[in-house]
Amino acid sequence: MNKLLTVTISAALIGFSGAALAAPKPFEAVEYRKGIFKAVKWNFGPMGDMMKGKVEFNAEEFARRANNLAALSHMPLEGFIPGTYERSTAALPAIESDWQTFAAGMENFQSKTAELAEAAKSGDKGQIAPAFMQVARTCKGCHDKFKD
Ligand code: HEC
Image (spheres, protein in one colour):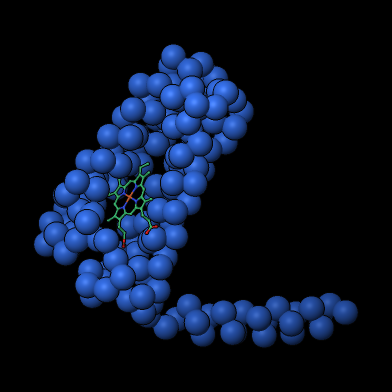
C-alpha cells in the first residue's frame, strides 16, 4: 500500500514538474494575472457593497474577504512578463518601460490591503471605511496609468 502510494505520488509529481519547468507561455501569464484580478474583484465587490450599505455589513465575511484580498495582492506581479502586452490584454506596455513605478504600485497595494485586513479585525465599520478607501485608491491609481 505504502509503496503504491509512493509510486503514484512520484508519477504525479513528475508530470507536474515537467509542466512547471517549462517557461510560462505569454498567454498563460496573461490568463494567470487576469484570473488573479478576477478573484480580487470577486472579493472586493461585496466588500464595497457592504461599505456603501447596499448589503448589510457582516464583520466576519468582511474580514474573511479582506484576508483573501491581502493574500491575492502578492500574486499578480509575477504574471507581468516580457512579451505579454500586445494580445488579449488590457495591460499597457508602460508596465515594462516604467517597471519601478508599476512594482511600487503593487507594493503599495500589498501594504494597503494588509492594513485593511488589520482594520477589519476590529469589526468596526467606522474604522474600516478609511482603510477601504485607501485600497480603492491603489486600484484606481494603478489602472489609470497601466491599464486600458
Ligand atoms: C499595481 C497595479 C494594479 C493594482 C494595484 C490593481 N490593479 Fe487591477 N489590473 C491591473 C492591470 C495591469 C490589469 C490588466 C491585466 C491584463 O489585462 O493583463 C488589471 C486588471 C483588472 C481587472 C480585469 C480582470 C479581467 O477580467 O481581465 C479587474 C476586475 C481589476 N484589475 C480589479 C482591481 C481591483 C478591484 C483592484 C484593487 C482592489 C486592482 N485591480 C488593483 C493593475 C492593477
